[in-house]
Length: 410
Image 1 (cartoon, helix red, strand yellow):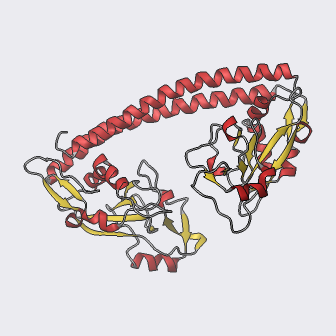
Image 2: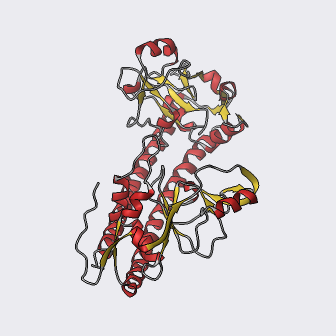
Image 3: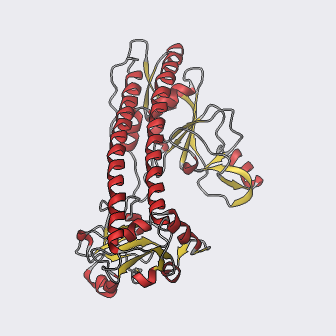
């Protein structure tokens, strides 16, 4: 996608990153061995969307490897900018003197501005602007992992204001965007409080029930099935979707946007492991405990080996929604956690899942509990949608302000 240079004020000039920076490089292309105690080694996951760099909880490497990478220009100097360029693209962080020395992986670009002509703060805001962010997303290359190549960054143009004007713009952006960010944080806190209220209500409703029965007494627990050796998933649509844990959402649904498929031949080999409408599914490996009720359109879909299904034995004894809501309690989460084996990839054993106790009451009482919680969930969801819409409006305003700033309109 070719960059279109828009009109800028008379005293401003267009320059490429290469013209205005003393160095544009990236981190280590070969991952060094990590150690328990050592020197900080930062990757994309250690940079958040607020531009903070976590040098405390990041991976550690030996002094020998650290010094070798430092010598190889993998240590960002003070007042350089980090830009995530592989996988998660577009995170930006300003390396200030508050951070101890650290080295980075090649997924992060290190951009060192020539401070005589380009201030780090001005560059940071430009990297966050729609002009750069939308372009960066548009020119990502690569297949499995999306990335921006350094050559593209070097050749990208920046609308350069005089230094004094850069400082004025940064000062104004600091004031405006800080207020917006503070408001967004307050709205996000409100969402968290509402969700905490819902969690407390769910926990309280189930905690008040004294009688308990093991899951195995109420439902059959059946694991999914791995693909036959040598077989792979396909994007080509067939009548046989294969549901992975990656498709499970936090809202108790299955994300259909990236569903993978298998052929009829493979399906026939593993068809006794399919999920049916009104089964309850649960992830048992990796991210343990994501649950949901199988929707009608996924009736007959194949289920990954990293998940299990719970099939109610007697619907006159147990309501499906009731069982689902129980899996959302902190009580269930704690028991599922205790039931896991500590291995490289945590896994919830089916036999142990079967032994988890469910608070049980009459079917009529179950339905009343479900109705009470669903009503509260609906009200909280409505409130959350309003808050999210406000957050989206504020984020749009931020983008608009940044866009105006680099057109000389701020």
